[in-house]
Structure formats: structure tokens, C-alpha cells
Image (cartoon, rainbow, N blue to C red):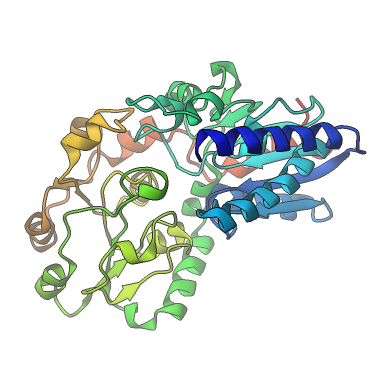
Length: 380
């Protein structure tokens, strides 16, 4: 979004917001919104399930509206944001898992509570207003303002998220990450494996190796991770091993070469379902590191560009010394790690306790108690 687009969108959204402020409120309505993906997943999916389980009659509105590029896409997206502004100004509780323009252009009414439940677990790579390189305009002016509360996974994540999301520290609450609840539910893990195997029966009875890197760059200039030759890796693996590609949902599916993989997962499919099925995870700077660590399974971190990533966007921790998993820089390193099987899992317990904190399967319950309860939602 360039400066002119932002100025015009802000003016229109603020005007619509002022009109909506005069409309009747719906204090029992809960809105779950994201500008990342078009499917309900992650923290929002777990909160949706928790609300439905505890209060099945509660009105819930889903705004699953990814950002679009190109003139037609941007105009369509703006139209969807106008609907979002209506719900922001009239609902009792508005839950979001990423930046969402209607929130940031102007303060909302005190009768609506806006809670940010950021889509990633833990504080790993820098983001938002916390990147080492300053945000460029117009993001520097508008991004991440007007949250009432931010929910994080642990005490150690409070300060990084306070900076990144421009929210006072006392309003950053370490309630735990709802998306981690499934890792403490044996039935949920078994169901996830069953779903995955039903979709991909060729993975049954095999050692599943999933490559799930994050992207590089920002906005329309996002690029795929470098470093993995999947064809050569596949040729080095035994027949009873299967190689899966799980691309990032915000990256062009064609950006990563597909040759060498038995399965190319739908980028929008639930990452935690794949983690439940995965025996060895290959990733880089993805927050899936935190979730997979809960399972105490082998992890390979393929980080050929670590020096560059330390400079931009940077990390909230010392990646070289604080991470679990085995760090390698090329395909040969990945092959060697799988072949020798030397994965030190001894540090996982301390890593999980320090960086994820409240991982006990009750994060959704704590969110419900704090923000939904048995009465009206959004009580401050």
C-alpha cells in the first residue's frame, strides 16, 4: 500500500466508522478477523471452537479476508474492510491475528474490546514495529495501533510483543497460545494424523519429513527460502521416508520448486495438523519451531542466510545459541543430519518452558475466562 492509497482508504474507513458509531450495537457479537488467509486456522480456529463449545448460541462473525494486490484486488479488499469497520464499531469483542486496517486508522468505541492474538507462537523473528530496520511509510504511521489487549504465549514474549504491536506492557497478557492446546490432547493429535493420512494415504507407515520454511522479504516482494535441493535430498532418503513440502500461506505457491516431494501440501492447510504427522521437521526461522518443540521431535534448521536474517528483520533472541534443533547451511547438512540421526533433544524442556511458558492445553480456556466468560463478551 502506497501513501496515496493509505490516505484515501483511511479517509473512507474513518468516515464509515463515524456513521457506524451511530448504529445500534450488538454487544453479544464476537468477530474473528484476519487479513492473512481465507480459511479459519491457528489461534482463531481454536478460539472459535472454544466459543462454540461453551456458548453455542453466541453470534460469531468470521472476516477471513486476505490482502489482495493489483487495482481490482485492492478495491475488492477495501470493500471487505468497510464491512469490517461496521463490525469493529458495533460488536462487543473483536479478535484479530494480524494487522487489520480498520483497527489502525482510528480509535474504536470503548464499548468494543479489540484483542490481538498474533498468528505466530513465541517471540522469534522481529516483526511489526519491532524490526531492526525501521518501517517505511505509510506503515510507520498507521501499523499496529489501537489494540486494547495483546495475548501472548509466555512472560518472556510480553516485552517483544509490546514493542512490535505498540501496546503498553500492562495490556500484553501471557495467557498462552490457543493454537498449542491440541498438542496436549491425545485425541486431537490422533484425529489430526487420521485427517492427514486420509488425504495422503501414501504417507502411512513411513517416516514423514516435512519442509516448512518461512518466506523472505515483505509485501508483494516476498520470496521463497533458499538452500534446499529437494531432488537431491529425496534421492538420498530410504524408500520408507517421505518428503513433504508445506509452503507458507502468504507466499506464492509457485515460488518454491516442487520437484522431489512426494506430497506438496496446500499452503493454507493447518500447519499443526502437519506437525502432528511429522517425524522430522526441516524449517528455518518459522515460529513452527516453538510448536514442534512441544512434541519433542527432531528438528533441522536450514539457515544458509542467517547472517542476513540477523540484520533484517532480526531476532528477539540469540538464534545461534538459544535455539533447539540442529542448524545446517545446505542440503548436504540436511542429509547428514537425517542419516546420522544425532539430534540432541535434551534442551527442549527448558526451551519450551522459557519461550512458550503456558503450554498446558488450557490457553483457549484462559482466553474464554478473561474475555468471554458466561456473560457479555469483551468485558474490560
